[in-house]
Amino acid sequence: MTSSPRPLLNRRLAAFGTTIFAEMSALALRTGSINLGQGFPDTDGPEEVREAAVRALRDGRGNQYPPGPGVPELRAAVAAHQQRRYGLSLDPDTEVLVTAGATEAIAAALLALVEPGDEVVALEPYYDSYAACVAMAGGRRVPVTLRPQGGRFRLDLDELRDAVTDRTRLLLINTPHNPTGTVLTREELTAIAELAVERDLLVVTDEVYEHLVFDGAEHVPLATFPGMRERTVTISSAGKTFSFTGWKVGWVTASPELVTAVRSAKQYLTYVSAGPFQYAVAEALALPESYFTGFRDDLRAKRDVLVAGLEEAGFSVYRPSGTYFVTADIRPLGESDGIAFCRALPERAGVVAIPTAVFYDHREAGAPFVRFAFCKQRPVLREAARRLKGMGDAKGAGGR
Image (cartoon, rainbow, N blue to C red; front, side):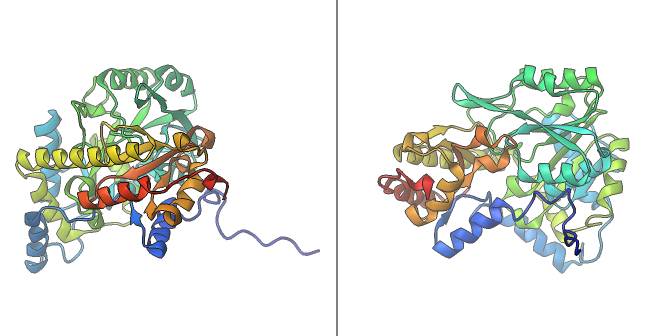
């Protein structure tokens, strides 16, 4: 009797195939559609930052392996940024670690801090790498669902408390939140901090959209709350703030003990990366406040262009308070299956979006929602809105 061949992919990753971003970006290329799916800008960031990278290359800085924790200039710049913005005092030598983007930082943190069988509570819907990284660490993912209420997606604090058990090791928090655009309030963050202290939990916070908050919303790092400095791993990156996503420069800030733990895993992932770009990002973090204000104002205006266009096309729209993503409800269009809708949309309208259901464990909770990125030039957003409005009768597309 011949036994079945052993699967090549280990069981922890068997549920994870090609990412939805790869699928939809390939669909955009094949159909010539406007890609509002993957979150990358269609223009480069500040010229002076790009020139700083060129200068570093020409000066021979970073062309060979940079230091394992990151170049001193960038670690100092990250520490200065955290002090200037949030009043967090960090030692750049022991409390800052440079990573290959925030995605590696998340992977390294979870691999370092989660034991097989540990529970990781994460806000759902979540960035797709969270689920894969928890699986690679051998942890068990426990979702707490953000639910639409009053024009935004809200966290149910009672549900969060109920999700924590004696097996919970870590809370994985994302604010400003991708994909919903929710920015957790001080009151919500206070409750999270109190829960973490009470149950002696570690917290990993993904704050890559920290500079993209709108309409009076405020980004407050969880590490600033009482009892959180020593138990929080804060993650951010340059990609979203400076529109150089291809550089893949991120960082971790935490206590020396936590940074040492994360570095223990990180050194066996990429070891080091992006040497010349690290020097450029150090200069970017020191840009005047006018840059950050102008960048935020520009993204808010682009958000408003896309929101208006989506509403005119018949979607029900949740106006985001942060990030550069808009979540839209397709039910007013007579649709209910976001995955089928997004797969059909390029042929129907020449636009690519992401079905939000792929970011849920509870897929039914995200079924009617789709995500559009507004980090594009305004003429591109207006053309996308025109195409969506011209779709005509969308009835029945979800059943294709």
